[in-house]
Every structure is written in C-alpha cells, then in structure tokens.
Image (cartoon, rainbow, N blue to C red; front, side):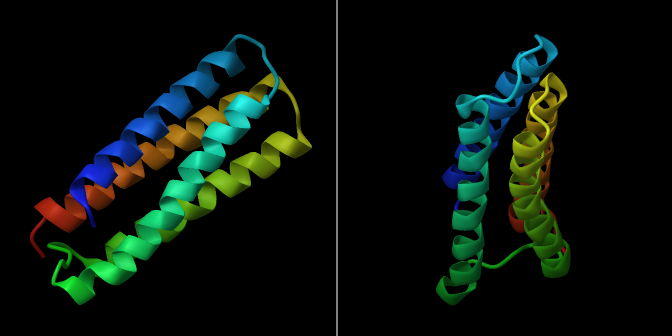
Length: 122
C-alpha cells in the first residue's frame, strides 16, 4: 500500500460521502455528481486492489493480518457498485443518502485497511 494514496482515497470518500448525504437529506434524487463521486471511490478501490497485489513483490507487506486486510478490501470494493445500482433503480432522495453512507463506510474501511497495513502488528 502507498500511504499518500490511502490518505487521498479516504479524503475523496469523505468528501463524496458528505456531499451525497447532504444532498440526500436536502431531498435531492441521485444526480450525475453523486453517482460520479461514488464511482470515483469505486475506481480508487480498484487501483488499491492492484497496488495491494503488487506491493509484496516490492517488499511492502502488511503489518497485521493479511486475511483481514483482504476481507476489508473486497467488501469495500463491492459497496460503491451496489450503491450505484441502488441509486439507478430507486431514484429517490434516500438513494442519494445511501450513496453518501456507502462512501462514508468505504472511508472507514480504507482507514482500517491503513491500520492493518502500516500500524497493527500481527
């Protein structure tokens, strides 16, 4: 994992989540902005998967449980696409709130992955 990329990923997920949550609570249905922000969070998770696959080859291994890290990463990677599908199917203000909560959940999961990779000792 790359530390600065993880911080950027958390920041993007937080901004996207707070934006979508605010728009959802304001009564706005899902818009291109909220869908795009959630898609960006999902895209960054795909990049994270590639980085995490390549990192051990360069001597950068997880400090904590590798299994726990990958469970978090796979689960986090599934959340944005599912939230986008929900937003496309059910275009109500609550769908926008779901997009926001999904992005905030991903931000928390990415922070936990950061702790497993850099901080936690197995």
